[in-house]
Picture (cartoon, helix red, strand yellow):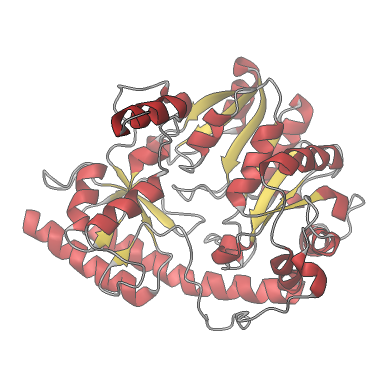
Length: 422
């Protein structure tokens, strides 16, 4: 008979320690300080979701859905055919008018959320070198460590250059490191840096000519702050949907403001989509059937354009307010966000006790403020750089996802906290 301590030892030797993503760690710590989801006196600058309520000019929010008799059955692993068609039609109508090569339902895989979609992609990769940018989305770290078929290769971006990465540098990385694929969020979470227009076209041209697949996480593609009200997507520049090495992951979470639906899609050549279905059959089994039916109407061009315009109007003012006030407090911003709903700040110039990301985070908790230390975005699969200080230890990711009144209240408390430290 095993005693409790023996049982604990047996479990510890059977199950590995699974690290928490940055946001999960942050929210767990905030809960210890008394934060709850309905805590109106807290401001969550760590929030990874947009405000989900009504916005001026936005389509009415869906408050109920019809469940049909066959919705009680399993969904196909790749998703309902009708939703797959709606996703393909969405991209063709909005970004590929007049182009000879068009997406079809067979170019679409539906999934239960972005992490699930990315997990299917990772599980389908072969024995390759996969490039990934630093900094980038915190959840990539465990994802890139879990599947051992491929080797993750970090590509460090320079804060001094505003995280710019030239076409020549991309070519050098592909050649010098033997990269067969590159994974990145675009716009980038956390910096807000955006690859768009002619530069994005050139990236796709280079990927095509060098047989390097671009795996693009486009979840923030409707949150664009430079130029007219448009979305940023590689789908505009794909010449042949079956041959170009471009895989796009997106969903309802951010750009349609339905994070609780956990519904995403992957767009790419049919040969890739077939492999994702095989991976999905043992990883997750498929997304919710009734939610897939309800999502079809959200993807119409009229609905999408109205939602996009409402997002860009409401969130632009929050972006500008957050930028202005953070800079006035002495927080440096390496690059003003061109996309996403985040500001990537550097706190090194603040008083002692607030001048590293983790110290700033801890102090904020005492003032009912939540933010995410930058070191969590120093994606380090396998902890191969363990023991070295993070290159982003002085950074913080600030979200302007919450409503404006909450942001203002949090900024007032943050300003008071910094003033007291001086």
